[in-house]
Image (cartoon, rainbow, N blue to C red; front, side, top):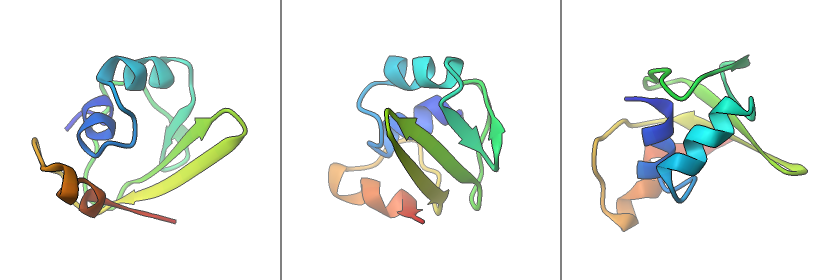
Length: 79
């Protein structure tokens, strides 16, 4: 699954276009490397997202195309 879609489906970022823009601006890192929005992710990848002064670090636990709102938090864990 593409990183921009994962961020939207897991509800870390509200809209896919915003996730796409964050990737293009270099604010999203996967395993320590800046990535484009088209980068595929897999279980076990570590993602860092910079939101202004705050940095969110997560580890991918599950990759699903669609999930319910209640299950979205089960796709990752914050580290």
